[in-house]
Amino acid sequence: MTLLTVRDLRVAVGPREIVHGVDLAVEREQTLGIVGESGSGKTLTVLAATGLLDVPGARVSGASLLGPGARDESAAALDLVTASAAQRRRVHGSRVGFVFQDPSTSLNPYLTVGRQITESLETHRRLGRHAARLRAIELLEAVGLPDPGERVDAYPHQFSGGQRQRAMIAIALSCDPDLLVADEPTTALDVTTQAQILSLVRDLQRERGTAVVWISHDLGVVGQVADDVLVLRDGRAVEQGPIGALYAAPAHAYTRELLEARPRIVAGAGPRPRPDAPPLLAVEGLDVQFTIGTPTGRRTVHAVDDVSFTVRRGTTLALVGESGSGKSTIANALTGLVPPHRGAATLGGSDLLRARRRDRRRIAMVFQDPFASLDPRRSVGDAIAEPLRVHRLGGAGAAARARRVAELLDLVDLPEAFAGRFPHELSGGQRQRVSIARALALEPELIILDEATASLDVSVQARVLGLLRRLQDEQHLTYLFIAHDLAIVQQMSHDVVVLQNGRVVEAAPAAELFASPRDPYTVRLLEAVPPELPRAAR
Image 1: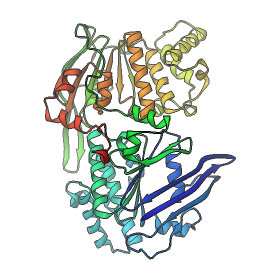
Image 2: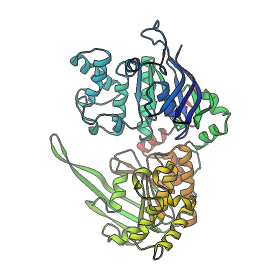
Image 3: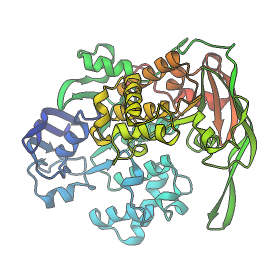
Image 4: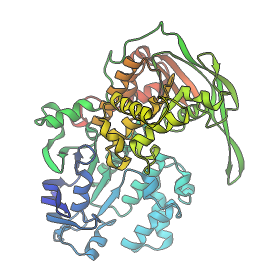
């Protein structure tokens, strides 16, 4: 039976229509994947269809009929577009649950996770405090959280990213909703945690009979959960149908582009080996420790434990591992942001850990979130020119700096006119290109790319990775590439170092590691990459 039927859904803000006549249907116990790049209207469509859209001046038309659920098959269908605020409040949390992309912003930092689950149970199921708490513990156990009886009283900041997302799923499922909306729930997670969340949602759906709407920009991820797919572009449905048929014979060029852009492991892929390249960066016995406070006293966290590796000039070495493996801590130690406990690092023979400030420009960094790493009050031109002014590069005077800024923008395939724009006027991919141009302004010997494409759509990610490879060939750049996704690592890297809990568990040339990984942890990372075929076709 069809649970949610959306017909001719349109959303306008002011004089501009953003969603243009979208139709979709969600069947009971089935998953509908909604796919498209940022700005395609995926989230806006689902928020409008479920009555959650709260944008000043927004107008929603069409119909979105929520049919009877398994608990009450005689109930009349409710049109969520025209429903009153009171009717929507009764539906949200009770019949429709939501899991959003970033659990750290969705969870209330002032309330324990258990309390955030019991709120919904007390409101919609009229449970008492004690019964609601017992139900919360059951839910945390169902989503795979360890020690649920203790973790129910923990706060969100005491959970890892994957654990917070599991807690969000527990909240969404607390009242056994008929429909679960999952909006990019795995985008910010490691591939292994992502695989666990995908498996968890499939298991819970099988046990509870819940219908799921899964929103994503990655057809590889959608292929592991969805039965049917709706592809959106610029607020319009360009293609929809069963996931197997869409993978086998995509009808629209945009769908083919999304399929080609998804990261996947391909035998023999990757850059050509450069075994004769001389060493540039040598790290030996690096050790970083932090002292943190806990309820039982202070303890020492060994974030990086006796790590050694060498990056050869003009090549890319990837540091791979899950969150908490020590990847970014190594980058912070190399750039002077974190003092190491012991160890050595030399760049071109010079002691990097004791380098003076003016020598640190030999290393540049590109971070994961370009919007957070660019000052919103500075124009693109000012952001790129700042390192030129600080380190007195690019010639004397404003005119010389402006010429150098134009050269750097051209290097990253952006027009000179972008110098006058501000970060909020750019797309995610354009902002990351600006961040790369800013890093190149330092004329560095080594660029550290810290999850530099993790927050981008797969199609934008593919273009940025292509840009980085071209710049390496043309400018003879050396990269330290930090990532958790081995499919992307294969495209970029000459050598790979795999980290787990701050220690190196495997290090090898990329071609050798992908052909025959030795450590079980590396094998697990490889297996977590979404496979070539969708789940329905295997």
